Length: 130
Image (cartoon, rainbow, N blue to C red; front, side, top):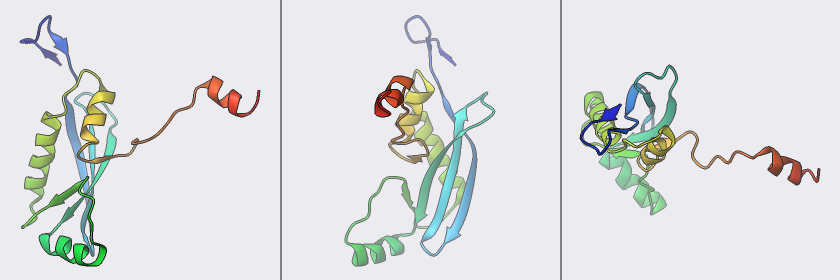
């Protein structure tokens, strides 16, 4: 996508929600958002939970802490509202490259490739003492 009002027309990646899987459990709903660029065939997985205020309060009584990344707290569940919120997040994550966009999305949702380190051939050979 080209942003024409930027100097020189800057190429940017606009992430798009391609699909969503939702599974209910005793805690609420676990979800996976499939996100990619508009014309990509595949997508990356970004995981999240949908919780009620009652669950949050009960969890805090038991555990004393709840990490808020990748969590949506809803009074009344609505898939339309959830999809709308994810689309709002994606509008905030438009970046020059897919990697930068995915890292930005990862601030809100849990990216499947978070904290993965790829080794170079030199690093592998060095670790083997070759």
